Length: 218
Image (cartoon, rainbow, N blue to C red):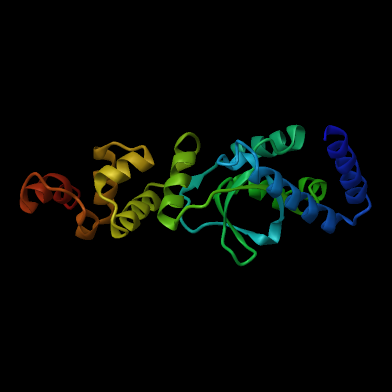
């Protein structure tokens, strides 16, 4: 059995080596997916890293993370020197396109620097998570909160969107790694009572509004 597997692997490697680049990349992606399907680690996104054409990867509309110019330069130097050590986390949109969940700036380095772009042949390394839109927002925020700087206004908009999606304060706190005061403050910033529609009040609305809502209107 071991010899037959070794012979089969040798045949596959020799066959792939004869392919043109695009066919080679696609074949390797298919093999990685097939191997991951029987892997004991298949539940981990990093178990299956694929190389996807840059034009098939798009940014999301909700990422509030900002990286200053010096940090972007450092990221470029890191990728230039060490290569891509972390894939870009994506969601497969099902139409041949992928949406970035985490790694927007790693994606930028691969696109905007010709030396990197040429080195990786116009592709980007990606892993895949399969979650609904609101859960993907939570994934992005959790990745970001460990690094980078969040834009306060975009974060408040995200909290409002999650409230509209039916998330209560407890779920927002749990999924985004925030405490209640932070969630309330971000809701306050929106200036909309709608943001509090899933809040469980221990006081009347008037008392709650006096404490958390009107103080910024003074």
